[in-house]
Amino acid sequence: MRASAVAGIVFANSGDSFLKKLTAKRSMASVPFGARYRLIDFALSNLVNADINTVGIITKENYRSLMDHVGNGVHWELDRKNGGLYLFPPYLTSGVKKYNGTVDALYGIREFISRCQSEYFVICHTNVLANIDISAAVEEHIAQEADITLLYKKSAAVTESTDNLVLALDSCNKVTRIDFDVSVGKQAAYGLGVTIINRHLLLELIEKAYEEDLTDFFADVLAKKVRQFKVIGFEHKEYAAFLKSADSYYQASMDLLDADVRRQLFNRSRPIYTKTRDDMPTRYGTKAEVKNCIIADGCVIEGTVRNSILFRGVKIERGASVENCILMQETSIGADAQLNYVVSDKNAAVGKGMVLKGTQQKHFFIKKNEIV
Image (cartoon, rainbow, N blue to C red; front, side):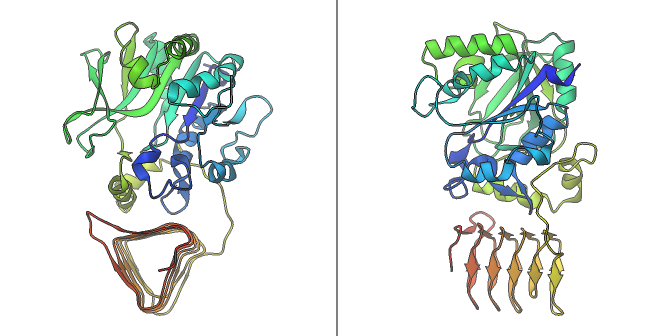
């Protein structure tokens, strides 16, 4: 199969409402994760690792940070004359209104879908975190002569019932029904937000759905037409995190402290690429104590840090104690401050001697540029 036979579409704002504090001024796609990445890095890397070199990103709002991060796609080798990276503004081509739902969004880029002439499209959301072998899924889609393939993970780990896509599968892995909002914690085949669909069928469904004034391409179209087409499931058996709330984001971040999770999420045969930033190595003071942490470069640590994730440029002054925390880029912690179960956005500052404590169920959140 030639690389140009498949193209990708990424929804940058999928699930913004799930992480309201982190998406107040950025899209879900540009939410920081894992000390040096953004969530879109996983979707883009999954696509390019499958030799997909034409990718369109659909934006809706708060996309300045996303544009700065992805640029022309050079860090994912998508800076090319043929194909490459396309960033679509949040307006329909037929007017100036902002799109309302995924049907509008796809209808607005129908010329792109038609013009790139790919036989298949892989549609991705950014609120599911996984390193997925999309090549294997596309090959199975072609071998089964499927119209649509939905990737899923068998799990009981989804703790929130909002907007869960759940597949009912027969013995041949054919999707017989698509449900939403099933019982919390139920063992089920949860959709991973990755859909493979034939191009002509995609265009046909978009046109009809737009004419019928439908809103959600997945709930209003695919779920209701699942028996009209050959829809199969493809199981992802490795780690996946469903980012449905601040709690699930925190838990997914803490999961990285598990070596087995890191091996699955950062598979050497399918690397996760991101925008590079050159910085000096992290410096540790003579009184520094660090245990079970993920720490990016450019940090200065003179205090104690345990079970935490530190992004680039974080500063921990002498006597400060940081435990079970996620501190994003350029956060500074003053001398003798004590933090436990704290999540700080970029450029936050905690003053000398401050005590900030959340719990495993309710974390203390510090906004971007906030001084505490």
